[in-house]
Image (cartoon, rainbow, N blue to C red; front, side, top):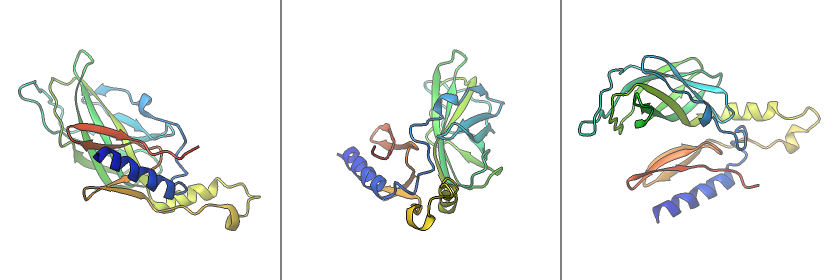
Amino acid sequence: MKLKLVMASLVIIAAVGVNGSAQQASGATGDSHEARAPLTSTTTAFDARGNTALEGRLLTTMLNGAQDSPVTNVRLTIKNASATYYSYLTGWATFYGSDGVRCGEGLFKVDALAPGESAETDTPGLRLRCSAATWRIVATNLLTRASDIMQADLSAVPPSVPLAEETPVAAANLVIAIDGEEHPIQLNNPLVVKLGNRQRRIVVRAAP
């Protein structure tokens, strides 16, 4: 029942805020570009258009977990490798054993990250059950300032189009509240929420 309520709320928000997230490329995904890297190396995440968005570097590199004693958290730095100011971002840090099998992942988040700026964060909820050999990061939410959305929309309008009559005004960032916990969302950017014992990946798209 909770999942149905969440989906219904997302549909309503998407209908109201379709113009506010027009800068997202329809149907584009960056997930397939994120490559695994050694624990001592930097790894990169991409935005919905396939452009470099984030760089991650592990501060905790001795990751020797086991089935009966998993590693439950790691420290890492996240750098904004784009030219966009992110007001809020989240992503997954995923770890793999020497056999290439995934053996743990944790969700990270950072508030207010300017271009070129780095911030230290962690991955609460991680359950790493192997001696990790490689890792990668994937961005799940990259929320920009409303002013940046407006500027991107106006720059895409042909000179012959009267701005006052035909240019849509960008809306504020969208937020969905689930049991009092707010989750920022954008069109075409996946939102990952935990419902019960499962992680749910929700994507809000504009109707054709």
